[in-house]
Each structure stands twice: as structure tokens, then as C-alpha cells.
Amino acid sequence: MFKRILIANRGEIALRVIRAAKALGIETVCVYSTADSQGPWLEQADLTVCIGPGPSPQSYLRIDRIIAAAEVTHADAIHPGYGFLSENAHFAEVCRDSGFEFIGPSPEAMALLGDKVSCKKMARRAGTPVFPGTEDAIEDIEEAVKVASEVGYPVIVKATAGGGGRGMRVARDEAQLRAGIESARQEALAAFGNGAVYIEKFLENARHFEVQTIGDKHGNAVHLFERDCSSQRRHQKLIEEAPAPGVDPIKRKLVCESAAALIASAKYAGAATVEFLMDAQQNFYMLEVNTRVQVEHPVTEMITGIDIVREQIMVAAGKPLSVKQSDIHANGHAIECRINAEDPDRGFMPQAGLIETFVAPGGLGVRLDSHARAGYRIPPNYDSMIGKLIVHGPTREIAIARMKVALGEFKIGPVKTTIPLHRRLMDNIDFANATFDIHYVERLFKADEAAKAATLVEATA
Image (cartoon, rainbow, N blue to C red; front, top):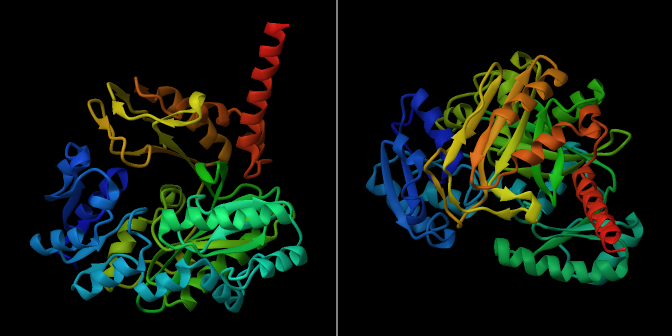
């Protein structure tokens, strides 16, 4: 087992890894930027190392400085968390070549599944359902136009690398496709250093369904059931829940098993999430594989009782999975709300600044994963998420009721957050009845804009 782990990340995921490591008796090293020098999570680490100024390219994305920090602190392994370098196969390779165990998949497995084009090819061979579209990255726009006409519009242009909604464009006709390919290429190149894109069929009304899997170095792979992440805004998840409500049990079983088979076929060791879209007839189409721990992993932990980060560490240390598929059961229902320091009334503008009030919720089945507290100053350099509020209950209805109470107790100020938005979504009839799709949140915002416009017209009439 490892003696010391370096965490190449920040915020709540750094704290999450620290806690899992401590429970295993492992010491931790946290790297940090000057913008994070007062980060509360650093207090929980055994050692800390500053690796550069606030901008990510000068700190959290500097592979050389992270490796140097691991060397001077005599770390045995490096946990990348999520974001930053977590899905960078080159970083995983450098860690290995420098004598550090990368707590995640091998560079080869990461490259195979992290690239969306090669992943789709492998999924087809493994029997995992995929979208119709281009087999390879687009080299010739005319070929893309031909494929789009064959599968039918609308189609979506997607970056082969990265995620988070960047490098994506929906095209409803040929003109939009031609423009979308070029703009998606430019955005993907700027965001990921890789401008390769491909196209696939776009579903207008779909739900986001993803399967949590984990494999080890002994050829074992299991699934931990699924999550529904349909509550989104501009491809960014807002609310996640497990299990996905209203899904046919037989279809659920088949798609979860196919996800585990895909991971096993890649000789994958670590946590991975296989993402799908599900249409109204509950047909599934694979989107991509995320080769890291997901932000929303706590809802899976809540229904299965399995510590996913602990499993990551154990697998990286060469241990077999602690559970077999037959040991894993889904109990009750869990919901997670991402708490972002953003102002929903001002176009979700990020809110940097001092948190003066921070009152955490509590009660049966309530969990808060957050690095924030009163007195913490949110830096402007990074993602706006400052916490995840998770609840668990024996049924979805009880979980929703508990989330409403928890959101009512949760007080953060004067910084604006998405807490009021989550309260509204918990009361939304489509969410309550699970009759939603990935566009329902955006439809709510459009209705708000239309109502404001109508009110303005009446006021000036």
C-alpha cells in the first residue's frame, strides 16, 4: 500500500481524496497555486507545495512542477482528481515514467477510451450501443455533409478530446453544419490543444444516463448502476440522481452490463463513467467514457455504500476490487445539487469574493462535500463550483423532500449561488414526475425571458 499520495487538484475533490487516504492510513501532499494559498483543504493535508501562480496553465496544468513536488515530498502515487490533468494520457505516462503510480487508468487505456472516436469503435466491438455518425475524426467537410444527410439532421459536432460542452455545435441543416465544424474545431483547439471533431446524430428530446464502472489490474470490472444527469444548462450538469427514475429494469441491466464489458475490454483499471443518451423509447446511445472520477460520484456511493475514491486508491496499489458484481445492490435514492458561486439572475456570472455567511444543512441522509466556509475567499481563476449537496432517502419522493429541507437550511452570502435555482427545480413538476429531458431547464429560462419581455411591453404600453 502507498505511504504518501500527492493530490494534483484543489477544492472539494482534493478534500475528498484526503479523507479517503486518511481512512486508509495514507499521508497526503497537496499542491496549490498562490491563488489557493489560503484554501481550507490545505489544512487537512500532511504536506503542501506551492507550484505556481493563480492561472491554471502556470500551476495545476504544469506537469513538470507537479512531478517535482512529488519528488521532493517522496510521494508514491499521484491522484489527479477531476478536471485539470485527470484525463491527460501524457500526464499519466509521465507519472509512470517518473516512478509514481497514477491513480487512474493506464495511459494506453485512457488514450483508447478518452478519445471519442477510438472509444466508439471499441464500443461497437464490445456491443455497447452508439450513435450513428462519422467513424473517424472529420478530415473532409464534404464527407461530413454526406454522413449528416444519411443519418438525418439534426446532428451534433463534437470534439474528440475533452468535454464540458466545449467544442460542441448542433447543426440543423447543411449551412449550420459547415459553420459548426469550423467553430467547434477552433474552440476545441483552444480548450484542449486538439482541434479534431466528429459528428453524430443529435437527439432532440433525450435524457442523460450514465453508468459508473470500476475495473482493476486483475481483469475484473463491475458497474455500480447508473445516474440520471438530465438537469443541465448548456451541457453543464446541475442536478444528478441515482438510480435513474422510471427506466425499465431489463433495459437498465443490459446497458449497465454493456458498460462494464466495454471497460473490461479496454483492460481498464480505475473508475470510469460510460455516458449515454436515452430516447423516449428508452433506447440507449453511448456518448463517451470519462476516464476519471466524476463530480457526481457521491450519489452512487450513497445508494451502493461503496467508497469509489477508496476503490481507486486500492486498485492503483494493485489490489483486486473489494466487491463482485453480485455483491453490489442499489438501495434507496440519492440526489446531488451542484452549488456554484454564480448569479442565475445575471446569466450565471461567476461570483468571486469573500464568503461571510456559510451555514451548512444537516439531518438524516444529508451529505455536504465542500471546501468552502465562512471567511473563505473564492478566487476568480477556477471553476465556480464550491460544493455538492447530496441527500439520500428510501424513495425518490423522500429524497426530494429532504433536498428541499436541506436547500432551505443552506445559507451562503453575500456571494450569490445557485441554491435558489435548485429550490425552484425541486418544485418543478417535470422534475418531480421525472418527465424531463436534457433541455427542460433551458426551456424554463426561455419562458422566464418571454414573461419578462411581456411584462416590459405591458409596462410601456
